[in-house]
Length: 186
Ligand SMILES: CC(C)(COP(=O)(O)OP(=O)(O)OC[C@H]1O[C@@H](n2cnc3c(N)ncnc32)[C@H](O)[C@@H]1OP(=O)(O)O)[C@@H](O)C(=O)NCCC(=O)NCCS
Image 1 (cartoon, rainbow, N blue to C red):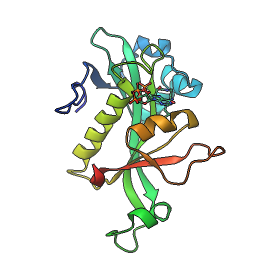
Image 2: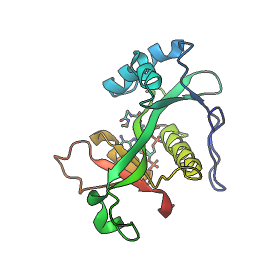
Image 3: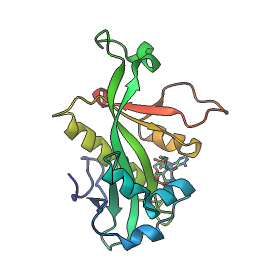
């Protein structure tokens, strides 16, 4: 799927953007210029850290490219497992005994550059739609039921709008709650 444009539905036309995998061979000069409101997410892509994740196969990073060449944002995904005990009450039906973790795709990082964040055409939401498409494609060959992430407090509402729910009730003092999207409920 890498290198194709965003997904679209009958009701919503995807904006024009390209998704391309982060290259470890060629240093992309745009990475050093990237800036989002979260310092650690900016540093991850601007430094060598994202490349280390690639090299050691800990996460694959994809860049969202604007048709005019600007870097819109990036996301990093890897496999994960959500502890079933955390969601058993609501989602335990049909899950065989003895399975402790539900196979998942983890959104380890997602960041949209300040220039594009919070504006039409809502690239953050399109990035999540693209990741959902990736997970559905993966599910044809590998067991994967959920998309999971740890949300920084400021992004909780964004992920709720994208259909994610928090594992536990989110209160004033909740730090980085685990949130998930059930692919079987789409
Ligand atoms: C969080 C982030 C990825 C969202 O991407 P975005 O392109 O700015 O968001 P979108 O424009 O696609 O927003 C989709 C919806 O979520 C809402 N939304 C976006 N960010 C929000 C926020 N921080 N709080 C509340 N709502 C938010 C938008 O208003 C929009 O709502 P609508 O459907 O009612 O119009 C982006 O702002 C970002 O990179 N933030 C800094 C890094 C970060 O927090 N990453 C997530 C942690 S991994």
